[in-house]
Image (cartoon, rainbow, N blue to C red; front, side, top):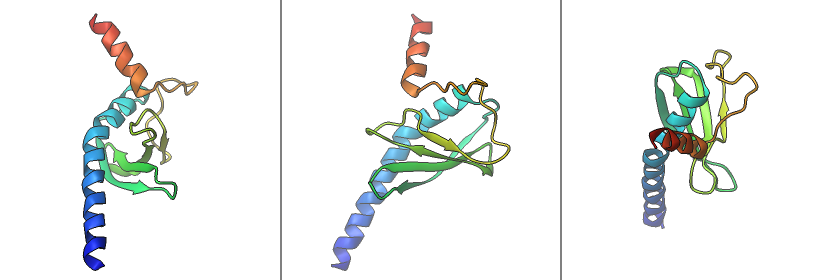
Length: 113
């Protein structure tokens, strides 16, 4: 029984590491596009809410007080992000019209054409 639990935990950890590897660039793109003065993004862990939705936790600019919680819905991070900390960098759009990762990529593609 203990062996099975360890096996499941290892599988979950492996899946979480894969999720971080795939989604960190998308989270970083989202943050740098929608917020000012984002120099670095650090991912710390993946937390699964009771419904099974993974949330990638981390912080920006080397300051753990500037943390974020990025929800990964439908297997991709698109923009479900909660930023905390009184001095979290301001959004670029004062009306808070955040642009999703898919829209950012679409705009980047259009610039290249």
